[in-house]
Length: 411
Image 1 (cartoon, rainbow, N blue to C red):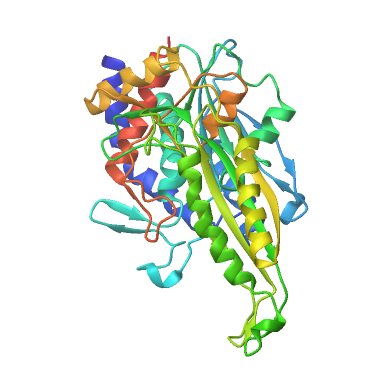
Image 2: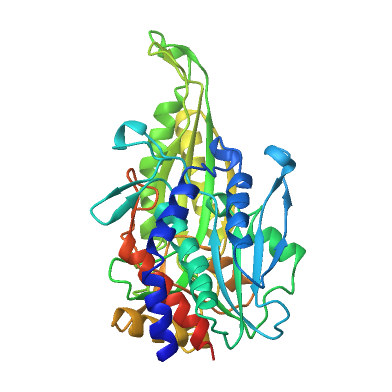
């Protein structure tokens, strides 16, 4: 406990440095090419500069080739401390990429220039996932400055491409380094949480993303009989999809919400002018499916609804799955990593954490599908992907202390 008290005080003294690193990272728009960006290369170099200021580290690059970005690859940094320490690790996985800011008029200030206000730092990425990334880096730094040695190696994975499916991030790392994670490792993914910091995520729903392309016939809007209006057909389809929750009606109170969800989200532009009936519409569906349902079963149900619309309105509808990740086996409530996370949260936040499942996809789900036991937690206000995203400084410092506890108390 003396060691932990020293580290907690050290972390308190590092908060200004933590804010400064957040500012540097926020100024680098690490957007995927799918979102109009140049990837994570520049951000990885800033993180490498920080790591160069620490001692006794092994830093391994696992680049994922991607011709769409400068340099031709997406960076993944694997950090291990101390060098030469064998055996199991305590892992923290975070991601470098961020989502686009969205409508700029909804932001009070420039989303890529950090600003402070009432104990919060604002900017795109400060909570998702820079809070956790900075917390993990400074937990390691605090242990080094206090000259404390962990009972097992500390390993950090700073990963690309989490926001668009992890093909160039964790999935690539697992393909290239299949033995990187061991069954005896303790794996933490601080990319989920709530304002109290008293939840540990041990399960995730399956994810099924679908692009829906509706084709009809374009014509002048004054002569609708000459065409087939795809906007009307797409609208009918969206309404009919509201029948899916009744078909997949199982409930599981581990999750919030406790049901499968089927949400139409993105819609691509069709015709640019008012007086033309569109001949093609493209929209997207985001499905989060409880364990126990198979994704092909969901796809078949959607195809049946699409076929009804085709028959009634004369369009053709093409369904293209973009992401298909079935729900993984949940982490055991008694897994060592869950027990460790519980102890850390009790010690730092004074709360007895609740075990939950979520619909959002994190890196934890990918590892669970590989058979690993993973705990996801953080103390956040859930402003990710929102305008004026922010991170409470106290939350960042607190999560840093939680991770430092995990490094020091690993069984």
